[in-house]
Image 1 (cartoon, rainbow, N blue to C red):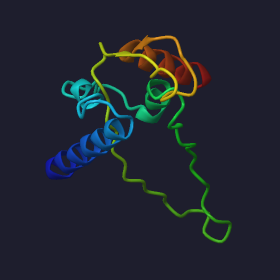
Image 2: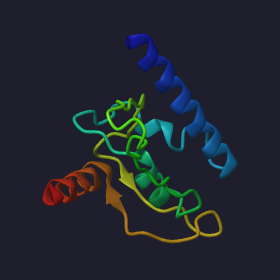
Image 3: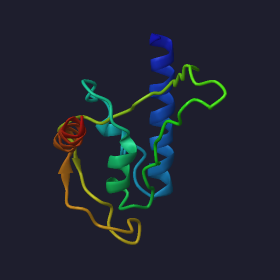
Length: 123
């Protein structure tokens, strides 16, 4: 598991470096904020990346489909990796023309907590 996590972290940081390069920013535009991630809960960084990129990259829609009718007791298994930034990171939308929409700045930890509170409110 440790090897898997290390490799996934390296892959995620590589992808963030590619994204920074695509935006014409410094290589560590995003990765300098992932050295001390917030690991207590998991949240798709796509939500924050959509804000950070000014909706240049949108968060993917997530859903789990039920088992097929001919196998109603089939167990579903997902293998995921969540990569996050430090909770104190201020996420500000990239200005136009890189960003397409401007969001108010938000601290990653506070944003995360608000998302978790919304999830708990629906339970």
